[in-house]
Image (tube, rainbow, N blue to C red; front, side, top):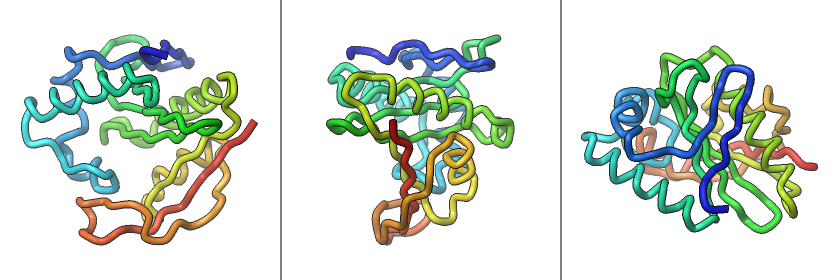
Length: 177
């Protein structure tokens, strides 16, 4: 796998990110402290920071160990979020982010469901999983609505520098073949 294949849903197109997405990504979510509150990275302070982040995402996809998809509506090509798949043997870990103005409209559930289905359709993949902060009810709902089951609690698992300098507890969710 060199680049993320296009995945279509009823309303969305998931496609490989390109450097030309920098402005939309900066404007829609990476600079927003509310969006990044439960993420593992700090809000971006400049478009240059976003361009560097995006180049790393594109390079990561070229290694084949991680694929990233820009989430866009079918009727326009403006990035509203991103979803990743990190390949770990027979497992795929997903992570996602969505601009705040697109929350509570089912977009991320649609994207996560499609990516889980695609991942489980790949040869040798038997498990798709994700973690989210125990206080991140939005992401918990997305995962549950995307047919993931909450499997447990991982104590002091993730660093969320926007929330605390201390490791945070997360719920682990899984979906299997």
